[in-house]
Length: 409
Image 1: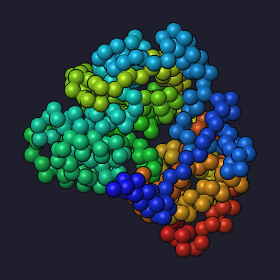
Image 2 (image 1 turned 180 degrees about the vertical axis):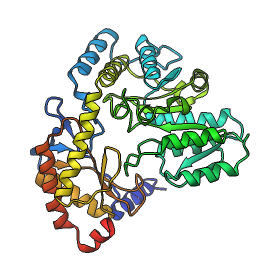
Image 3 (image 1 turned 135 degrees about the vertical axis):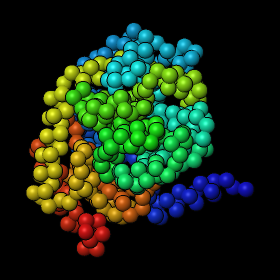
Image 4 (image 1 turned 90 degrees about the vertical axis):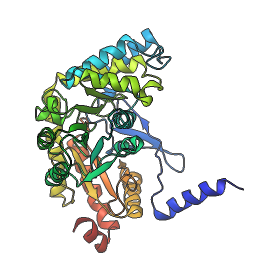
């Protein structure tokens, strides 16, 4: 038996459908960000502007964050040397967890190597610890949340995206004393929709349900202290478990949950994804602490960022570039075809020096392929104008009328 045939067949099918993923090798520059360098197919060095980074506030290239990382690495080394229960719990880890707990107004926090692992571990562990727990999940939830619920093997009920009425109907149909948890995101990473968090919290209280929210695309960007959408609406105490990341608004690496101390201790004690994973490098924890402090103490940074998002959309409107309007910072241009999406992205990169990674299945359902544009604090108005001009030219060139009707009609 030739096992390679299985892999070759699946990969070829992916290429034939237009859903195969090509990775651009980005030579990131801390000095020139969001500009970066890459080699084209002829081996020639080229430059481009990154319009798809999640480093929203450019904290990964902040001089003080880099300096703190370097200082701590010189003091503590570049690795933790073990899992948290062996030797991987350092003073840096404890200080970062305390910082995150205070950020979200919770009793405790628990660090993971990434927010994906935090979601999978926490949700699957909740299902194992609470008998007959029912997960009530938004239909647009991230893959990590879907995987975590699936791993628990508990019952799952899906409610329509951000549909409070449907969520209320589901909750009303369940016994009051039935263990249940509402699982949802605050900012949905593709369409950019923001969840009605206060209304969800109110329903949870009315129907005796736990709440679990993923704030990964909101922490650092929303609320007076950068605590996310829960902070913006002052409902931190009404949400039981908050999941967040250090890799986007804070520009470092790692994920976490914040909750009451008994929940944190339970996940710490029973979550396999936490117990058996080597902890974050101490220097990364130190850099994350510095980044959070900088972001927390500078609300004007968030205000300026959101003003720049508004400016970008105004420029798009002037150039008649259709985008999915929403209240968040994520700007989505719906294309609706994977091959066309790839062609547009390639043309923008190689002819205009504009890098936008196309988004397609399984990240989005088939037929919802798109270009997702994420602004950073370092993009200039001139770069926005250049982006709009190039987009207008490429869309006119590559999108036939039928695709325009499908994508934008």
